[in-house]
Amino acid sequence: MKALKFIIIGFVFGLVLTKSEAVSWYRIFEMFQFHSFHMYGIIFTAIATGFIGIQLIKAKNIKDYKCLPIEIQDKEPGSFRYWVGGLFFGLGWALIGCCPGPIFILIGAGFFPVILVFIGAIIGTFVYGVLKNKLPH
Image (cartoon, rainbow, N blue to C red; front, side, top):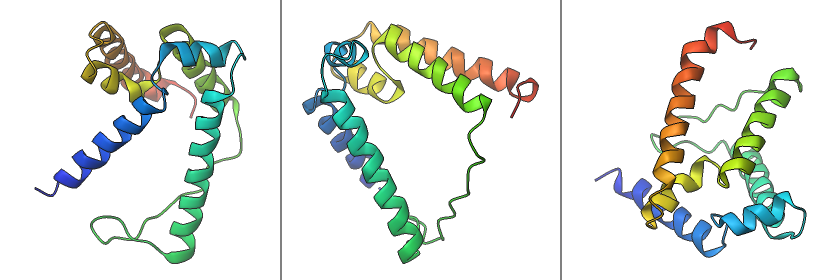
């Protein structure tokens, strides 16, 4: 039953993304065509929320759900791998019309062709795992 709180949080997150139309292919298409601020507003809100959350975790020494301290390691300064990773992520997002999070929401909402996208994500994750040691990190 400990997992119930995480299931509820996931359900609420999916509901918020659905109601805000963040999982809508049309909204994503609008964003990549620079025709609407809608998705950019959602993304900027997520960035601000994450920034504030991290600052609160650091300032208040907030612990995780197991009461262990949360350690946030510094990232290395911007590098080539972040640009390449962002490029692949953005291209995939533009071509498919959804990023990894909404895949589950769209399947749950009955958009079953997204199962192909899910399978592609699994294959891509597997390929990365195989090639990880050969890639520059």
